[in-house]
Structure formats: C-alpha cells, structure tokens
Amino acid sequence: MWEVFYVEQGTGIIKINEREYILEKGVCVLVEPKENHEIINNSDDNLIINYFGVIN
Image (tube, rainbow, N blue to C red; front, side, top):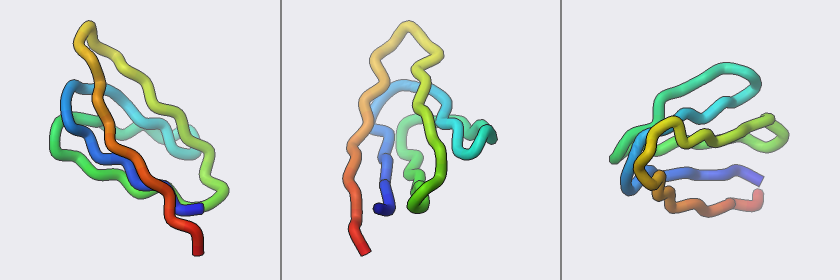
C-alpha cells in the first residue's frame, strides 16, 4: 500500500528506510509499499497529520 502523509500542524521528522526528512506544516510525504517508516514528534507542540493509504 502507498501511504500519504500531509502535515496540518507542528513539526517533526519522518524516517524512511533510515533516512530522515523534516516535517512541517504544508509538507506532503509519499511512502512507497514496503518502505520502513517512522514518524517522530520532536517538539512540545502537537504534530497533526492527515493520512491515507492507496492500494494498487
């Protein structure tokens, strides 16, 4: 499944296959099937993300 993450509020990091990317308001990230990923809130504020998956 493809996964799409859109940051509504806050800041953080997404790790995809051990590589880190900055998350901040307005950023949209696509994670491909079978990619290892982890989202980390690295601030004191709420990290609000809209998420959906797409099955091929």
